[in-house]
Length: 205
Image (cartoon, rainbow, N blue to C red; front, side):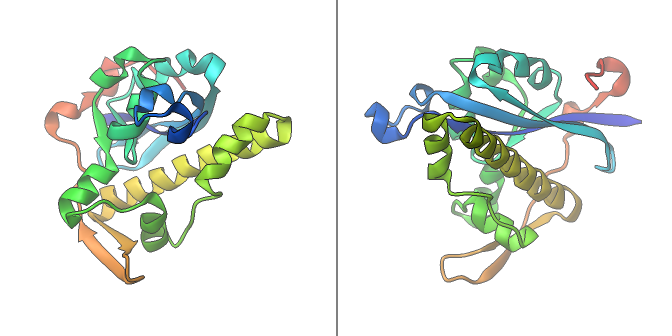
């Protein structure tokens, strides 16, 4: 049986672009990385999985999961999340990466926010305002850190559910600028070369 080992992830930054005086994501700093590490079969049924979160001081521990994935998946992750992570995990740019937003733009002709896709595809919304994620990190009391962790993990959950919907149904829905529900066709399936069998890879579960 063919097994796909995946990481679906998101992160939050310590600063706004205005704080650093540039548009270089590598200068923003990471407050937290949350990821869902799982195995799925060739029919994209989940066999096992778990959510993990890593604060800045232990981000290097997340590498064990990233490096063991056949595919790491995010939303706007190639242009943003991977660049923010690069100072912490320099090798991450070499991993097989799947950016949902890239595929949406290819099908739609323009970018769409995670919030709009979550609303249209899942009937769901983000847990909080993205601005608050940085404010929570600046406060850094236990309540704020708990809210930050929950927000980041919820974004991972939304990303995972959107990804799974695209995998299984080969379409996504989103609310457009005019508040109209639109549907696009997508193909999130694995090319043959991305597949590894379970025998080729150790388990981290």
